[in-house]
Image (cartoon, rainbow, N blue to C red; front, side, top):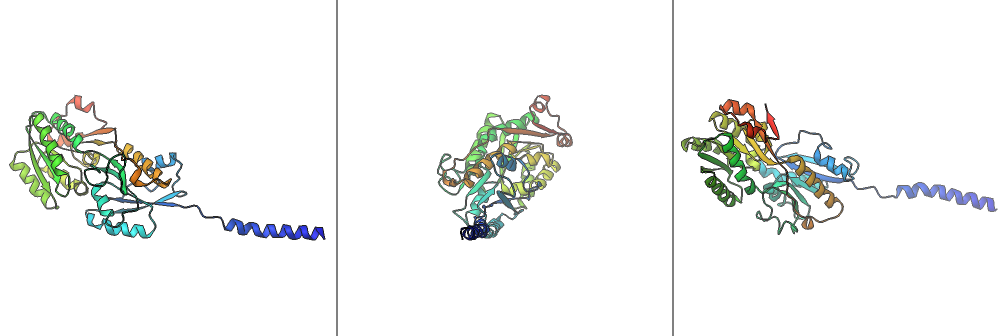
Length: 326
């Protein structure tokens, strides 16, 4: 009788074990929604952002996956793309800058939005302060106005003797006045006249370069923006056609044929973004995660473009470059 009771009990345990295992909750796989002007060239799971997340304990495919969308030259598509990604349960968005963040905010004020390189999240109205943003936008910002003087100085150093420089600005950027003031002050200190030209549509680029020619501009500082970035190749082509050296914050301008780029180190920024995402996935609110700023900057010089423009880059400048494109 005792033996039967024991066997019956054992059978009950054996039968109950699979049921208990089946009842265990499935581990959540987080979804990161990546919105960019262009689709990344590296496969999901590869690159400095994923490397840093791996260091922090997050394995791609096991703990999180990414959904990637690109809006090309139609930034107005962002709200629809973001809404579509929300349908699949995106937990956090990553975007390149403030204008893209603003478009995502049209469809969500609750899902965290992490920026890679916003110009100034406080001045842009996305955050109350760097230490405590207060909304659903945080991430990394690169204060463009702090770089303008250095970029103009580098452009003049690459082409000694220039006295007339131009500043190509996206008219949709909402912090233009501050950038213009900084550019004009820097230009004055360098002893150069600065011509400001704004663009809003693709057709404006041709008109802008005609204005540069009429004003006898000798070099161009190209503002970083989503719109200009999406059309950087036509800008580079026009600059070469008109024999004008250019510098921009984004390294792609140099790799795509512009003379120089000087701006934030993209690897460092990717790692900072990963650290912000890590905090969010562990339960922190975007409103309470401090906005970070990069501390490492890179100078890239395209010698092929210099040769096409008939420029001889001083050795002192080449020696300071982080990358020289032959």
